[in-house]
Image (cartoon, rainbow, N blue to C red; front, side, top):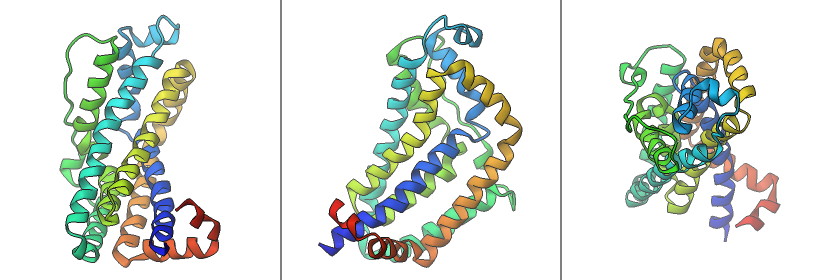
Amino acid sequence: MLGIELATAAFLPAAFVAMLAGFLSFLSPCVLPIVPPYLAYMTGVGVNGLKTGERSAVLPAVFFVLGLSTVFIVMGFAASAFGRAFLQYQDLLSKLAGVAVIVMGLHFLHVFRIPILDQEARIETGQQGGGALGAYVLGLAFAFGWTPCIGPQLGMILSLAATGGELSRGTALLGVYALGLGVPFLLAAIFIKRAIGLMNRLKPHLKAIERAMGGLLVIVGLMLLTGAFSAFSYWILETFPSLALLG
């Protein structure tokens, strides 16, 4: 019973990190600027057409988010399966993952640059937009094609999934990450005119957002490296014993 309770407590901080990482991924310099063009492409109209309400972008956005969520959830399952297969090496995996996440965080903080993380492997999905199926395929392509760009954030969550040792926990973590990235995309589609204005105001601050992501990566990496995630989970369980009921 204690193991179930601890697993529940351990999932909560990891889920919070996953949600925050997804949101910051949406705000990253290589995702935020392409949101309006993507919405325009998926609806089959120009950005001006979106502003005037010529066609709604909500349904295509839903299928786009379903597409990227499919890829992320499969990744979470695979990472969890890998971690479970090497359960006896969990301590070593946690430390290696911690080091890798810290390195990626230092990249975002511009302590040094890793060239591959500055690349965008965009995948073309054809010339015509406007369909739900096309939006779903575009979501799949986005998840694969922008991996170098959102790789540090995604790698951090995959590391948490792999070191958890439970298939359901790792899969759920990537689902939460997909929510953090996908919900702002849906909100942008619903409130497109306001969203475009907000995105234009955010563009001058993208470097600061990138550094905030780097700081989060370094913190999580240190927690993985030192075992602080486990200690924090025990603290949560002791401080909020009612959480045991969720298990």
